[in-house]
Image (cartoon, rainbow, N blue to C red):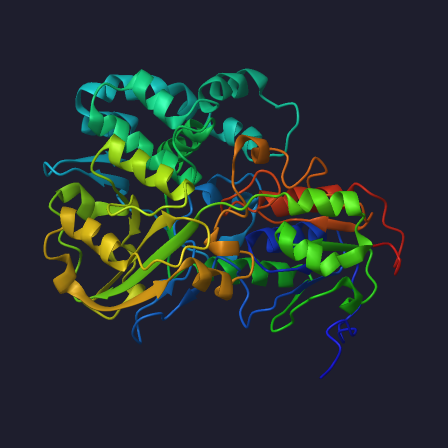
Length: 487
């Protein structure tokens, strides 16, 4: 057996990026834009990390393996300016970004129109409008500051106004603005994307960001599956002279050929393994204290017909949040954080084939759903998730032709960055929201080795900004030819 630390036979490059997720590809693109030769190494047989598609259930049924809905991609200050349309990327914008059904047969809905969304919230509509309208009017400027590392904001007044609300817990923010349980549950569902207990500080900010993004740009899908987003990033990188090599795992820095810069699209656990004893003990201890978050348990379905939602708004929605009440959603997220599962978990669901017929054979459909579970959870949540869907769409189970199950450990086997099923690159607690994974952010103690994953600011989401800012940090240092001992 060959030594896993033996040198890989690779072309010489100015920069090597390990990992081809959206952050790794963003870092590679930024380096290539600066005129450097760039090589991306991917362990899997296809590039993409959490942005891949596959026939998980039956032939002809295309499913997004991990991420699927991309509000932060179209809000990204970097990705939205790339010419990805010229490389085959086509967005699909559902009529309703999000629907949240209730047991009385009604549903709240989130669309590009603040007024339409407010009307769906009944007597809390005016409060919702008051909360959102100023932020939506300044959304582009706001996202430029939100999707950035810790720094003095470029638009300090707008950022400060947002921050005063965003720092609050989702529970506190919802309770202070809304009187009805429907409106509070609607906001709790958006905030639960934080994968934290909704009593935690800053969870309200996640709900605000996602609602603002829906009003500003929408929550789009990619026509032809998430893999098409990856393919567009790869072909654009190749047009700049960059290369991507798959089936090329990297277990040690010793395997890499000389390069001026190495950027790792990995989490702290893999960084410890790859860099080994080259890292000083103090930094290794800091990385060892990095906290991973909740896991995800996901189902993909091949369906004989669309999901028979009771509320008509749900049939027009790309994304659905399933939780009957504010208390139910809060309890589900809190229990997961405490290491317990819920009989009625909060469920996030998408039905892409309603808007993109390429996802399934004619007349058939696909859908997926997941819930948050304790880190590394081994409990089968299939029955609980499907019961939640059936609750708001009686007859749903009769539509299922086949299902695929991805447990937290299945996620980690699919993508080693998803430690224990954590799809966020680490818990986004207040202490890890900005200083990820340490106060050094992208930089490590090794001068030309940088981290560019979601374990750096601004954290989770398919926005590419972690990779972009890591590349900017690398470019800020002078490059003077090949320096084999630089890292």
